[in-house]
Length: 83
Image 1 (cartoon, one colour):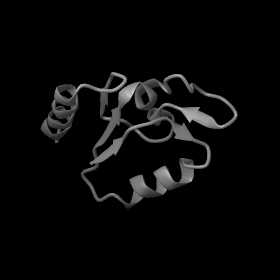
Image 2 (tube, helix red, strand yellow):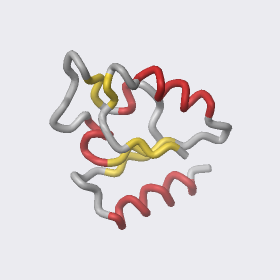
Image 3 (cartoon, rainbow, N blue to C red):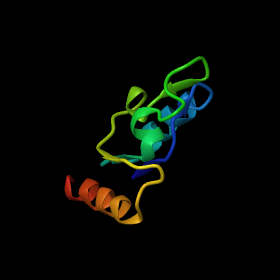
């Protein structure tokens, strides 16, 4: 499972793709927080691609800024239950 907790910068795009590709199947991706889910206050600009789903497929979104610990646990358990 990959927990991505922020927006994806252009410099980190390749690292995120390589990490996703290196993760053994079954793969789960959880986007955490407003930045991970939608790009947050950074959005999409010259330095940021925005949300995680613009780079890799996301299974579960956990909103919030910061995310509630219970929401994070719920998101992780939801992702696991989809296997």
